[in-house]
Image (cartoon, rainbow over all chains, first blue to last red; front, side):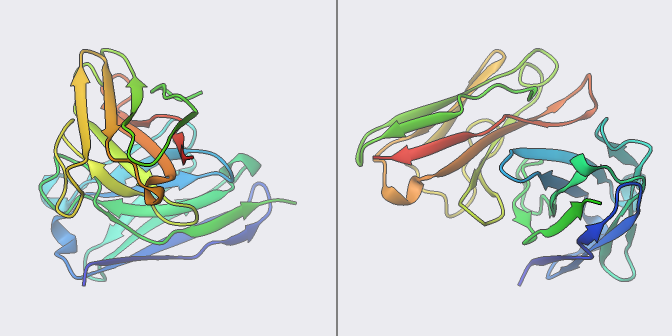
Amino acid sequence: EVQLVESGGGLVKPGGSLRLSCAASGFTFTNAWMTWVRQAPGKGLEWVGRIKSKTDGGTTDYAAPVKGRFTISRDDSKNTLYLQMNSLKTEDTAVYYCTTALAPTGGGMDVWGQGTTVTVSS
Amino acid sequence: QSVLTQPPSASGTPGQRVTISCSGSSSNIGSNTVNWYQQLPGTAPKLLIYNNNQRPSGVPDRLSGSKSGTSASLAISGLQSEDEADYYCAAWDDSLNGLVFGGGTKLTVL
């Protein structure tokens, strides 16, 4: 069964750090481009960033609000995606989803995790 | 403020056809394909339409997508109570070098 399971969310103070993980199973993780999307309480979806597969360069792209503070990485040996979040702000409070496009959907993301909640508050 | 513009709400009665619009610009919808997602309360988003008008396996054909210029739309015909959800459009933006979403449309089945 294809599955993405996020973990690592929690309560953190402004200025603090947190690392989210996303464990993948049921598909060839090595070939997948992986994406983080977040959703603030009562708000819409917001793209955080992505990491390409190593065969496609393994490069990363980030949304402007998180660039320089967040880092996306992957460990293909563990089938795990990471999101390192530093210098957290209250506006980073959100449910964070990891997602990917497995089927040939032109980049449309057809597999999503259940999300993990990050709360940034003093 | 979202890069892609959607109406915040839409509604219809069972059996009706509703359309949700998504307006962008030349750097996103105008030059890249549009995907649509459905999000039921408390759940992760689900891909409904990809490449402007393609349905993934399992998505019923009463849902359809279209794109013209810098705008796209999602149509749902034969509206059902289980269609009540939030709907988001998304497209890659070449200027921002990132994926952009619409603000979402809350569909109510009256």
